[in-house]
Image 1: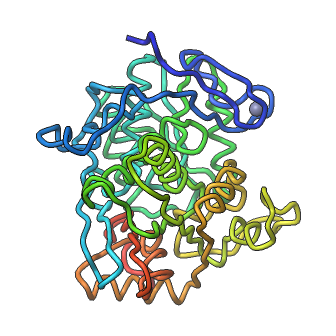
Image 2: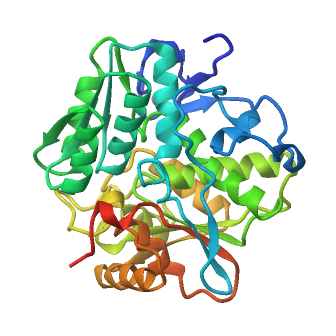
Image 3: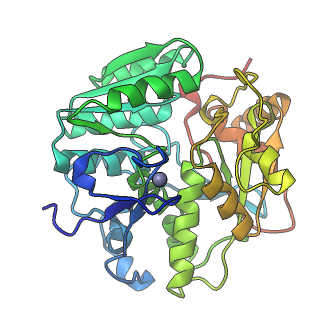
Length: 370
Ligand SMILES: [Zn+2]
């Protein structure tokens, strides 16, 4: 079952590792892996009719197929909100956030590798998704979350039977605790940041857009960016579709950060290829957009390059804009969590080109911003 699996490869120095070795980062530079993966075949729009109604319908372009861990994730509705802006309702996922797209890949991979334990870390939604899919796969799972994580999310993680570790300090302290646990032999680190299978799951977001729009993509795709998992998945998909001649041009990727925690936007503005070395020391200012409050994203170089290559840009939103966007979306019938409204806050008023915003997480996860 494991023959023909792709290899991990380090984008910085070309180091390779076998996926079965459970090596969660590059041993040379401690950076995140990419996946050395060639799609099995070309996807054609006409061949999709009648397939399973989940993200697994795009099997030709996924690194895993015939899963047993699925909860029916994917195929979320695309709904016009204004004349030019449409919303993709990724909060209508089994665990109520877009993270299910990547978590199902990690859990299915883990099931095939049969580790002694799975660990994950998260500001909430990724951990919740990993907990749910590990439950589905009957895998023992520990999720590390920072103190101050929304009680609704920790309750959901516990409900799935995962062991919860609440780590004092900020999001980086939580990541460090999880990485220390991930180094123990026999551990599969279900990291949405370091494991590239997650990105091959989130790329289905764009394949669904492409299918729903009849083989086309909008002028721009806006995504909230913390660790960049949805953005990098979107970049993978647009590159694959373009390389196979399935789209004429790539859409601009519009990366949205909370102004209070915007290290990537700051680097982008100066033309830097990586995070600025003199970024803020110590804990960043608080933001309502807890899901994208990431001061030092490990895939910063890849995120900055992807946005530039697409002809896109970075936008930042204030706390007041986040509050207003949550109320505005709710007034239109969409109850979305504070992180998931950031893109609407940034581009909801656009009228000059078509753009899709993801509504990434359900409002019930965080409640209404005060
Ligand atoms: Zn490396």
